[in-house]
Length: 354
Image (cartoon, rainbow, N blue to C red; front, side, top):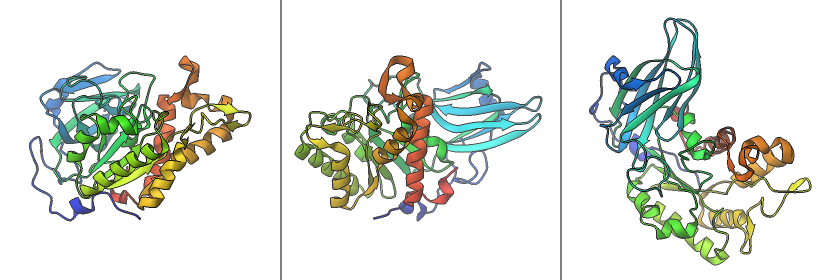
């Protein structure tokens, strides 16, 4: 089964430019940069720009990167360290325009944090080897902008503090204007807890509409969940996502850096008393005719190919001995794998890719 993000939204005429618009073609070019918005920025490396008056929602953003007087290298992050634009190198006098759509929410990072966590409104951070920003434009996104929701654990979530980084934190960099990535994940979450906590799955369901995608990666914290309950929980999540008209996509978990000789151990492969959790995900996907991203198989091939030493930079082994959670670099590696599968499966139209 293959569905395409934004089918329902694309079938409806786009409304006129909402507040903060200043010309351009809605949904294509992004808002025109407004020099006055640079007054909200402080610092030089990084450059921090805050817009506390913007309420939670979805916003189209245009940035002009570079400097008319010197070369620059700039990447753009939003909110809790979400990578929106990979590093852009500009020559002396050159400016580069980039557009993207960002989800502003409360809490700002992990969904299971208390309300009010983080900075109010929209935060943009321009970092890199020599960051320069010459212009910013912001407008409220069209209400029918498609959403790519993520429901997952600590390996997916928007981690608030370095060096921890979830792959969902780096996924937005793959998309340009018109797709809003909603990372509704949290550390410690399992298929049991996301269904039990009102701030988790119950809070995500009302945000989903026809044409949206919902990627679900939950397994690392289901160590004590029985096989029957685990499958039942995934089945319930799939059914409730489908009831909104959105398309569920099941994602098997990333492997842990735990070796037994030349191969990953059972712990590394997320095997529990309930059996192989990745295999349960595969079986549920097949039984329910749900699209599957087999991130376990992809990460297994990558990590075993590198070996127990060369794979260490993907995780936080060298920083603090952590063999489950990923570094900024490692999260990018796994975000690339997820993006590649979304593209291969035809789940996101070409016009949305950066």
